[in-house]
Image 1: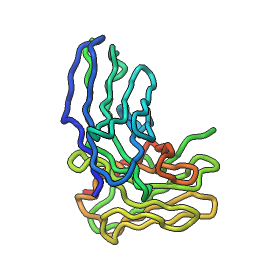
Image 2: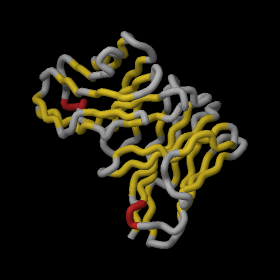
Image 3: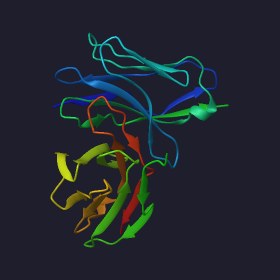
Length: 111
Length: 114
């Protein structure tokens, strides 16, 4: 079945460091890909998405490119802030419209 | 526009009891999905409702059930609670639930089973 694998956390970085959170997927067909973020005590919020190969989703300085050849959707940010501390979830949605989430990566940014 | 609301926000129950959680989607959204979030299993899809019909179902036992009303509000019920049902239950809504659509999540209901 469809699945999403993302890097284990926690990831701890200093402010202004470069961030990469890896995400790979297994799916039939051409899924849509998402990154969601969950701040402490809150529900999930969509961070960015891409619906077809080579699309780049971007928001709040975060970017991810849909790479069909490597079945990846890695999340990147050039300079992280303390306020980016949260749990990040990679997800896919396929023809059956269910969303499959990765296990989440907790990110800690130190001032 | 008001976001997705879930009630109650926190709940404590004992084993064997049943519980009903409520979700009000964003106005105009007709698809409501439910997820269970636990530290060990992450986010797992429970089911999705669209126009009062269950359209998708995850791999959960029959103790987990739900329904959707004509105003798109949804309820989720868990009967004969077990300790392992302790989790954050998240509800998400979208316009029609198509794969490429953004889902909007509520803050969740945190259930503790003692």
